[in-house]
Length: 365
Ligand code: PRP
Ligand code: URA
Image (cartoon, rainbow, N blue to C red):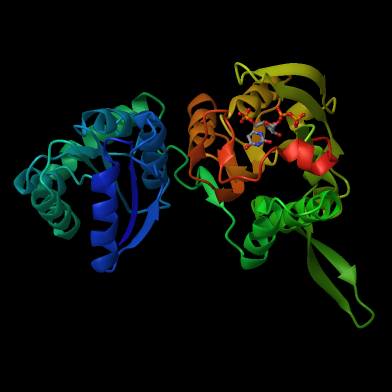
């Protein structure tokens, strides 16, 4: 089974044990963090990420741990399509599968013995949904979700897509290296952005046209008059523009100027110029770094205020905190990233990250 796991600092030790158990049992896992018990983090950031990855169908099940499991279960159950069970013993876990078809399990890292937690996890993964009379009850929950307009939340779209192509990963490894020169850094950022184009444009629609080859007439496919806009967040987003424009040369380019106040880490706007018909365009916001998420969330706000609707965020390195903030403020915006790192440090820098992307691109340090 494909299982997403996550915890805060209080659930970290239990999450690590469960991670090993799942691997031993032959499950495929994705660990959304956190990655340390020492650094205090906010459980909603991890609960939303794991829950959304299950609701979107990217992962089949999710397991969350915090101190008592209660916070995580509250967070996960806010997400339409998530049915999260807070289980303190194996029989509750079993019933949550038989009767409720639970797809996320919340556990108390500070309240459960390891042995009990393992039994809970095993029974929860092994037990099928019983169907029968329980189906109509679940339908009532789903009907409530659809009445409140939140059902099938991004059912066909993964909210976060990590582009793990080997070439992208190889190049990301080089830009992380502190010894990489400004010239090489700049070239690689363009190349990675170019490689990402293939996936970020996957949903564009095609139409048939007739062409005459040197041999005969035939039908061929062409992009169906899609209007695209690329919007880099200044400065560092500029580093990705050329790599993308090379492949989609007719896209219009807008610019949003934001910098992070070093004290508050809040974004400060200083420039915004977008194509006049932004409301008709598929918009790709570019920023290599999604750290606290403040800059990206503010850029999305600015674009929405000017009428933009179809927005995708493209970054190179994301932190869980930034992904969670963007998804909370703008749940319909899909995020593409080349890497999802562990966390932010006390200065709001991504760990391990690559340092200050703007300084490394423009040699300003
Ligand atoms: C960097 C980066 C992002 C922002 C990410 O820009 O390019 O725009 O920080 O951080 P956040 O997710 O916490 O908002 P910076 O503010 O350093 O400006 P610069 O690109 O002009 O150097
Ligand atoms: N901005 C950057 O350029 N790097 C980080 O790690 C965080 C914000």
